[in-house]
Image (cartoon, rainbow, N blue to C red; front, side, top):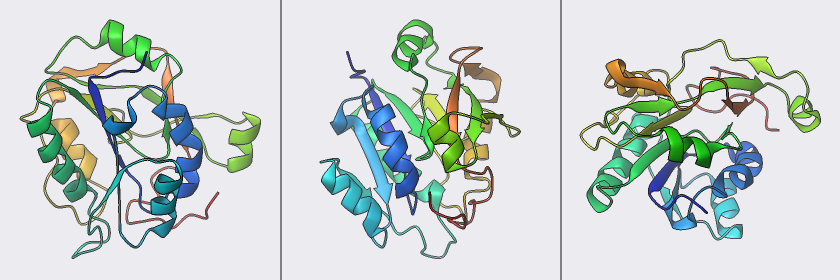
Length: 208
């Protein structure tokens, strides 16, 4: 059974190569109508990917007065979803993240505090061949509960309406839940594709 009470927000700007691998792994947990991909109108690859998968998407002016306004795009979608679905959960998920195979079980069994921000630990495949061959999975050296995966219910919490880039967009939202940060499972983790913390000002790494 898919989760009918969770809406997913995914920012995908020049990340279609990652989305090709992450989307099939993640969409199985959710209703397609509850999966909200936001891209820039210039990103024709992501638009074509969504069209070919019959997946709806939204466009946003990511580069207007910004290197990439991630916070503004998320804020826009939050406002819409908070109003339309006040009794559902919201999952913020980066386009290069794969959820654990037991995500549905973790959600149903452990997601019981509506004031919490939930997430997982993370591990990284930095190279495409490593991911395809399932080797060299590396421990994540960054901060948990960041925008790579944030699950929440409290509709009074929002991303800022503007960010110059991605570097601090996630941090402010995380800090709004500072006293209620909770791992959905202490042992499992999400998988991140690519090198960490280098695309904060827009995609600069080579495509997979």
